[in-house]
Image 1: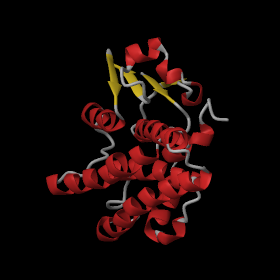
Image 2: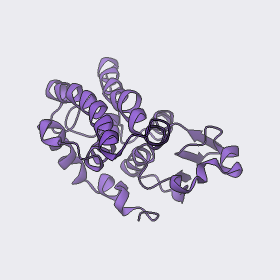
Image 3: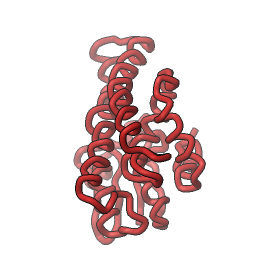
Length: 210
């Protein structure tokens, strides 16, 4: 199994966490987004969207981290990252989607590059943009963790909600977002990073990290 990613990509970070939690051995290959490696024809042949991550496994090339996480859950079900009950599974998926669908896309590299180049946003304006959307998502997640959490986002063990949250907490730190506004999310982050699977997936621990 080969995970193509970039050390600071939040989406690749999610997949690293899930692979580690499930104990799936894999090789990592770096696609440096800063140099435009994602636009190389060889990479575009693997992923026509020209993004990361992509997972090569079982003769497949899988893209889009939510789809990869679902595939891992279906093909490597232990330990489970979704609850048993259908209503609980929907709640966890909704928490994950707040990050994957509503927050992360608005502060990833290509959007920030467009703000800088097309709209001439300076560093403070870019950070304010990121803060706006991260804060909106984290405000909602804080309330949902209050409702469902018992040490992690949902219950007492990691789920795909935590797999999505932890990379976004890392991004919030990069953009200077004041995370003290969300004590429950901060507590979840501390609990997650104490686990080897999360710690080993951290961007700073990756072979292509600066």
